[in-house]
Length: 314
Ligand code: NAD
Image (tube, rainbow, N blue to C red; front, side):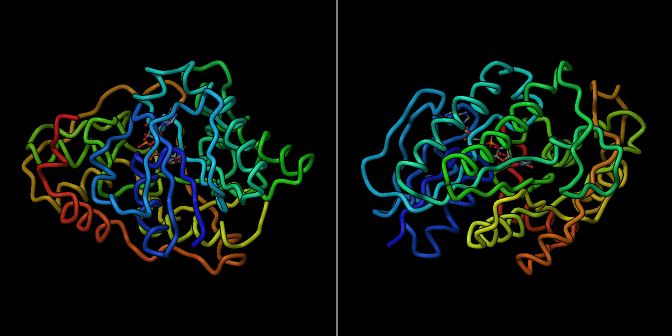
């Protein structure tokens, strides 16, 4: 039975990944210090083939048993988290990625790192292809996340080129689904919580900035296909259907039948104006494309998570 190690496995995406890897017949070692994740996310995975180790990957760490595949997902990911934890975010992207790549090297394991569309910054190319180098403000408040991820990509390619590690890089675009934290500050959990509580929906700016939202099941399928592919260069995984934030707020209102009004708040610093993946490479290389449309995904999120969890106080 192959063994997969998932850093950040108790987080939103990591817990879905652990679940799918177990369903595919793998043993899973989840490394997570619960900084932004939760034991609640992995409570249903308690089988003999699943183990959670509470370790901070910014410190060196070792695993005795053989590991075949490493998925590196640990990192604060929402603006609320990385603005609260700027130095930790930089350390996870640098030391944490070093330690995890070193572990993959020792075990001769395939290594896949969770990068992000934020490496493109506030893009001057639209939609964003993997060949675009990005437009990032390194010294703005968001720089700690964007640059940590850019450094993690550089480090991953260096371990591949110099040390021969079998690496992969997935550039994840905004993803949503059950187990998002209601108060993590990202648009979909915030709008769903506000709509379900009949509180005003807070849209930043005039709501004309765009995002492309991918349902979590589609994303996990793409990540596993990339891991299986043997490809080394970065690959975008996301849903190319683009919506303005105002359209998203209106869709959430329709689906929840909420009486909330929409209110407008100032744009955060360096908030990207547009965001849309070009997924030609994923289609060609992996035969992958998303299948869940936004309305369907939002409906599934509400059904699977339950309104209470989406309104929770975490
Ligand atoms: P999350 O906050 O739910 O999960 C991150 C997990 O990492 C948490 O469980 C947290 O406790 C853990 N962690 C943080 N620091 C750690 C440390 N030092 N040692 C061990 N564990 C640590 O976030 P998420 O949305 O699931 O994101 C997972 C990964 O995917 C991140 O690397 C993020 O940058 C990337 N990503 C996510 C999205 C998205 O839309 N959700 C988009 C692009 C990239």
